[in-house]
Length: 88
Image 1 (cartoon, rainbow, N blue to C red):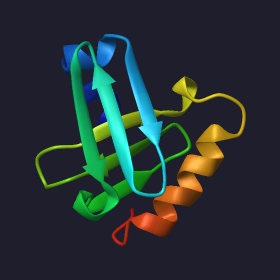
Image 2 (image 1 turned 90 degrees about the vertical axis):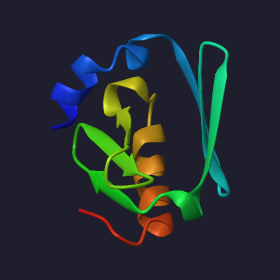
Image 3 (image 1 turned 135 degrees about the vertical axis):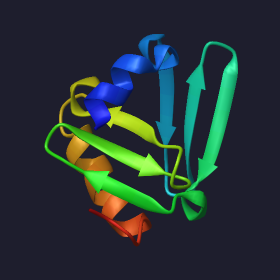
Image 4 (image 1 turned 90 degrees about the horizontal axis):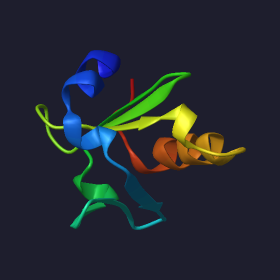
């Protein structure tokens, strides 16, 4: 699902900056910054290749493993497991 959707979403092909901390996930694409508090993320899917975070059933954010450095993907995975109640 994630790979097909990623191919269709042109904004995700532009350079982006992602900031992640204990309070929120912030995504900046071009001049647009989207700050998502963890409490607003209702569902998450963790695979070996990517993490999908859903604020609702129709919208999701894709975090491909290949975009993380070193052990950052593992650290993000652990944070997602602590912050998101509904995981697949």
